[in-house]
Length: 80
Image (cartoon, rainbow, N blue to C red; front, side, top):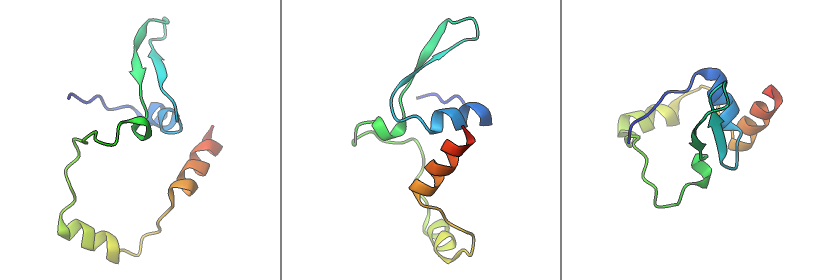
């Protein structure tokens, strides 16, 4: 499947969706329908590669802050 990269503004607006939404051109012409990943069937396979053991170890030993899904969603909702 091909990918189209959404700019930051569009990505933020789509990230908080929990149901499908129509994506339209400024003229009102329907471009397509966005379906949130959370609504995809469980057997849907991502095109994302699995993380390597090195990446997993780096993540587990990192001192960077981490956030729960609820914390991220709350922050995104505040952005409006």
